[in-house]
Amino acid sequence: MTQVINTPYFSYSTAQPRTRRETVEASRTLSGMLLAAVLSALLVVADQVIDTWVDGHMLAAWVALWTVAFAALALLAPPLRKVSSGLASLIASAVQSYKVRRMEEKMWEYAHHDPRIMAELQHAWLRSQSQI
Image (tube, rainbow, N blue to C red; front, side, top):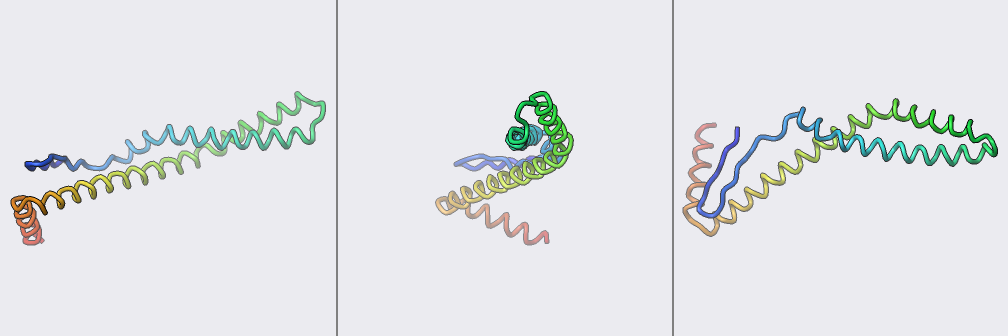
């Protein structure tokens, strides 16, 4: 449910935060980039290790390198997806709470300049206290 608040100075809506499914869908790109970064770092390390102990056996080195690459893809994809989806939902909730807090600060600032808005806020606060 979206609530729209209109005043003479500004208008804003307080939308519900994203659902878990939308957050997971949004974090797929993040998880792919995180997986690519970890995999590239792992490939660089594997290349350095293989380069030190293989002098002329290039085919064996490439087989070992790609074995490490595919093993890393298989082992690291699910944990990195969980980490990135958790991180994305944490960031989304932080951004949402920041937006709401900023809108409330703007409303309070406007209320200090306009006694009508301050009266509306006080009446809303009294109504909310009487409902408890």
